[in-house]
Length: 116
Length: 266
Length: 156
Image (tube, rainbow over all chains, first blue to last red; front, side, top):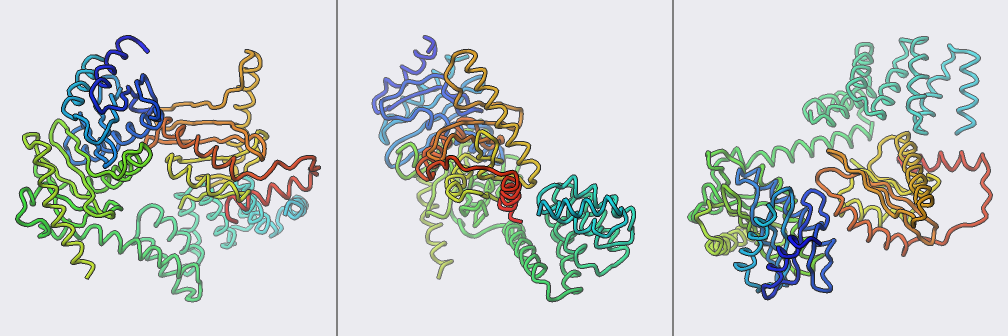
């Protein structure tokens, strides 16, 4: 993993409650870089997060709301957040249900900006 | 089957005017040798151009090959010779249905049924097409009905609240884009797939039951939640409305939707 | 309606599940010799036969390349087109080595196909009967079996 990618992900995973963060190729749903706690299935997170983002993009395009620049799925056992970065890359984070979403969001947006 | 094909091929080679080409064409079609079936039938029909059974079979081979427009042409020539030909009406009914022309499909299948009221395959096909036509009407109806009273009194009820079933059909509410254009049906169609993906993602990643999704876009923010296991509630608001407020709105609209759905069941 | 059909019944449930989860448009499950065990999405027998032969040939060619390079056999190949992608995977089961050819569209992705392919392989390995060995194949049997397979795969 390149230093640039590692730094981008480390700032996200440092937030309390985050189980892992990764960069994903949005069209392919494949991992570009990852920093995950043990037990988190990286390939599943990558494929499903990319697919979820794609489907919400279609819904929001249909409603003329534009492509989502922040997507937050809340489950009763965890949280998934997706933020698109340039060149079709997605910054993805998974974490506990009560993690500090505001801080994670901030770090993810910074990570996405850092990839330009 | 293979030996029959060989024997029929030999017979046709001996006598190119033999009517065995019909049986051979059908046998080749059944084993999926569609190009061979097509060749046999074309040369057979050159010998017997008035054999409408041969034309009907040739059209069925064309359908198997995915050449629907050409098949429709051939069945058209059958009907020129026999306006009550059941096979041709059935075939044209299928091609029309496949092309989304439900009225055309109904017309041909009803003509086929008039020609042979005992044909079970026509009866079954007619049922399928009628069901599809009814479903289409049901889907179109809410839009035609205009304003929906489901969310009356709630903030944004006229343009930013939508209740959808798990198959992407609008149950109530209405969505308008910033230009005032109705987008309820289009959003509903995609939303069902997005919710299924949310459900699968939460399940496979160990996130438990999904409760809600917030998506922020350049033009608007969207909040989606399932008020019941079979329905989805969507709230669309401009970016000035914070996500916490969207959650409060969703709670109120969800309670209204659940009460309304309960009332529909009684 | 697009259908999933199987010559060998034990392949049907895993294939149906894989197709639904991965969003595959077309799928062929076959032996390395190109004998088709199950298919989803094909409407013409001639397409199945061609795709099976080509898929088996691609796996055989890449296997030879791997041997030449003294590498382990490739377990999966992916060709990404503008609209569609083609995924070709090989795996072992108690029934012997099998190949899967998967065509997917823009509503899926290679990531989703790979993810559910892993589950597909596990389910097939669990469901597979032991490989039949030493069975003589006569030309007449082959032709009969081929015709029966085509009839099963296309519901004729």
